[in-house]
Amino acid sequence: MNTLKRTLALVATLAMAATAFASCGPKEDEGSSSSTPEATEAATDAPEESTPDDSSEPAADSSAIDASVGVGGGTFTVAAWNPDDAPYLIAQWKGLDYETVADKLTNDEVEGVDFISFGVGGGEASENYDQLFASGDDLDVYFVEADWALKYINDDSKTLALDKLGLTDADFPNIHSYTDAIGKDSNGVRKGVSWQAAAGGFAYNARLAEEYLGVTTPEDMQAKVADWGKFVETAKEVSDKTSGGVALADSLGGMWQAFACGRSTPWVVDNALQIDSFCEEFASTAKQLWDMGGVTKNEQWSTDWTAAGTTGNAMGYFVSTWGFGDFFLDAAGGVGGAEYGNWNVVQGPTPYYWGGTWIVVNPATDNGEEAREFIINSASDEEQMAEYAKNKPEYVNNTAVMDSLISSNTVFNEKISNNFKDGQNYFAVLAENAKTIDFNGLITAYDATIKADFMKAIKEQHLEGGKTYEESLETFKDLVAEHITTIDVE
Image (cartoon, rainbow, N blue to C red; front, side, top):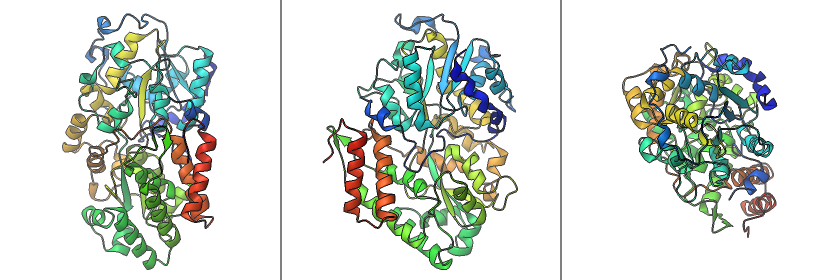
């Protein structure tokens, strides 16, 4: 048995995760869910309802699979950096119980299926995948994350064009445009597809908003944070009324997740680093919030970060779809906690996504039929996707499915839903952002490292160190030149 699989010792926590909205982007530092510089340079975050059995799935037509793709192999091997998603996708595919699938995978009780979990953060997965490919161990399907997906999607030796499995754009007619862009290589060939949409919003403590801002509805709150200028003004209002005791925003890292999606120029164009007005806008906005106490100085993923929500020291959090049952629930104090049930969510200053995971196929797979079936079940079959959305729960990457579930006021998870004041349908808010995110032409293979380097330079030099923006930029450029030697940095 593959020794990597033994990292599923982490699986003791999976039973709890099955009822929570699991993360698609594991907890990492504030810069982004970044890959290692070396990895980036090499590139060119039982269901309650019955689960349909295999007979309800579209039958895989083996004739649709290209003759170059291996079929009829033994074990179907799926790899991911953690056990937050793959076991449940496997359960949905195989008609297994969500509560017990993790244990079954650990004990080799799912016939014909092996799951490798590296037990690391998403940004660390790239190194593990490289080692797995180098070892020649069995691998059929694996998961990649937005910030470093192109390292593999642009490498024909690491990812199979999905048309080799008989899958075309017609099989994914209702996916969100930004997920579509990330799943295609530089030639427009589809190599990956995501089953989830990780659109974000700004969740705020409605009790504190009424106390310090006089806000009583999400519509009124959205008007207070509709753009970054208004966000800064509202943060100052809160800071002034609380003598700096309450920050509007949870962390610089959370703010960066949203702000970074407003960039209109790729980080690299014609093999050269691009530094434009966006960079200075972020530095200026961040400094204003930092100096006035409008954003906490807590490190993202620290206990202080989530505790600030429980104590009322942070009024709001930037949260993506997967985060509402993860860190955001912790920030409320959990079910019955100090601030549980006091929250609402709005679109915030800008549409953004945070995290997301794409399914890709190893060209050396010997299980092309199973790979096709798994992808169809996870990201194409609308009936299966609807069941997964409710049972996981998950914001699935299909506008028709989510619109139907949202319009029928589906309760995806009572523990999560009850954290929202007046029964607000939080997915309905995120749906509006998901439909307006546009990242076409903006994604590069270097994004993870460059975004992390920029955040590091601005935070450490400009905000904490008192250096000018221009001086901080020099540090940023030095970091990029050190970490990515294949692009021009002037």
